[in-house]
Length: 190
Image: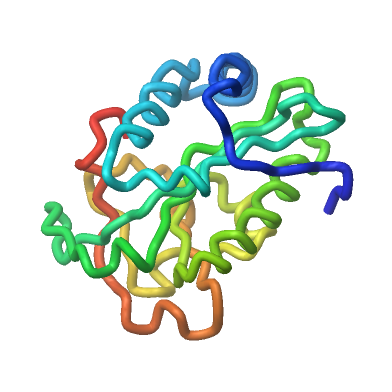
């Protein structure tokens, strides 16, 4: 883990830098997004009832924003169709999206900022985190396939690999009584 990274809650002053960072990150680092849909998702989350301003972060190195990520409340569904279990939205957060500035790829920024932020999520009393992404990366920071916890992706999610849907318990047994389906239909841009 790097010791030169500072994470802090984003501010309105950061928005322009965040947009630039996300566009470059997704255009240069993925083959599935140019970043515009990711920016739309962030704006949608910020405008939703699930947004947690204290858990929307930027990562800085030497005063420069090198990463952005946010956690938002996330209710599970009792069915694959979206009948949400609202009592669980205070217990789970979704980590999405995550972006590292293209100039800082493969330098330990992502794993450091997520590891640091997981501690902040724990401090706020949440029980678990869901994420969809590259399991090779997220397994390194403590995530496991979500089905191991009784949390399943729905058929509406185009997963190329079931291990891409993951969860992390924030303490042993925290997710024992929580189960259901991950349904993104509360967001148009998800």
